Length: 200
Length: 221
Image 1 (cartoon, helix red, strand yellow):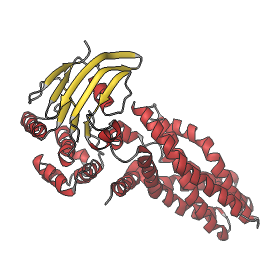
Image 2 (cartoon, rainbow over the protein chains, first blue to last red):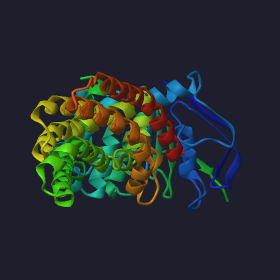
Image 3 (tube, rainbow over the protein chains, first blue to last red):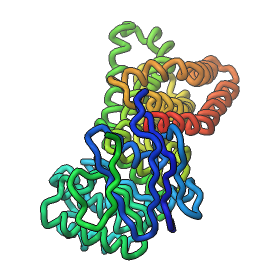
Image 4 (cartoon, rainbow over the protein chains, first blue to last red):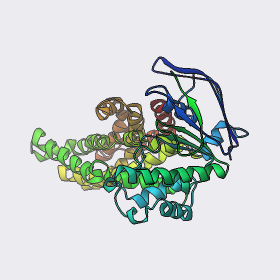
């Protein structure tokens, strides 16, 4: 369980361009931060750096008492622009695989699919789902496998108004349970969150 | 079911469907095997002499066919990111992906290899060795080919690049396997060539995943 995410003096360079430097952020259990900034400011890169996919130029990323390797292996969910779903597989197969891969159980996957109202869609191939339904299937992974730190990249963009609100409630529950959320957004998050402006 | 067993089941199913899967690979293989006698001439004695070697080279080409999408789809749709955020080391994940590819495409090709060789005129007594070579060699082709597929991630026309990277690395298994089959056909001891082929495959299985994981990490960063 991650109790704290701390970024100190963080700098990121992509393709020879310095995106930002001297970024400090400390996020405790139950807190959320919304990363804002213009396109290309480095929001996605920051999330990928926290996930360990992108090397940092300077500074450090700490996960409280956990070392980064085990934190990323057990306690970090990354939801990117892409939903990581294969068009030819059924929703049920994809949800079962990803929730098990991230450490969930069959029962928790079932619960998540009910919560996201996916039960009727589970036998469809992913290619038959709309963008919003695909995103809900990807979100089900977050609920099915409990991991403390959620890294969300534009999580709400394909969702309709009702589901944005519903996902807001899910994020609030995650925070209430001691979770942490770092989200790159253009629209404000429907939960209380610290604003962190990147770049500019 | 453990996480790795689930991954293997998923990868095998994906490889089975990827670009037509085993049907396309075996179909391509049959096509190359049919073209050969048209080019070489229908003379049975001439064909019989080249049949085992031709079947073996065609196999190497056919196993290239399904490789290019091995990592590319996961790279494009973000699945590789999530596969990385796991207690399972990426090296092991890559090895399981290759194993799934081998089960879905390598094994059907190994079944087709002796059939093609005998159809071209090879002696039927060579068939078991050709099957064994194709099975073991297929493992080497996949694990070496996976390195090429991972290295060409993010490149335009990655499939072509994969072939150019990988073909030189296919030289040793082609020589060892072809040598073993040739030796048996000539009544010589064949076990040396087969042992070298198996050693190359074992080396590829052991070292390939390290290179694939490094290449994947590099492509993502």
